Image (tube, rainbow, N blue to C red; front, side, top):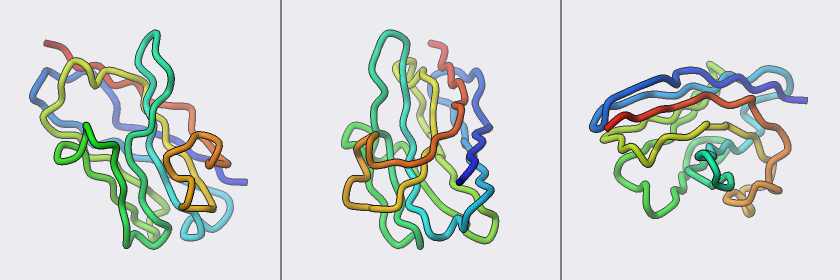
Length: 124
């Protein structure tokens, strides 16, 4: 079992930045590939970014490349999502999740464990 707790969300003006953190406890964090998803009001949850267990590969949804950066600190049992140049359409609840298989990293059903989410609101 892996427990995931997100933090770092909040209210920010358009053009601003936020860094989300996801702290893990339980099973060995370094064994897991990690991902971030988000769910905007009235929309389905969507893939944002993922990172391989040892941090040597990252993957992003095309529309967010260049603005969002995922990173993983296995020593600190934490995965991060740096979000820059935020836009109102980035407003959503952001979730981190843990997966064993990197092959299905963009799919929700590829993840075994989920955090409770953190709200990000971007004002115009």
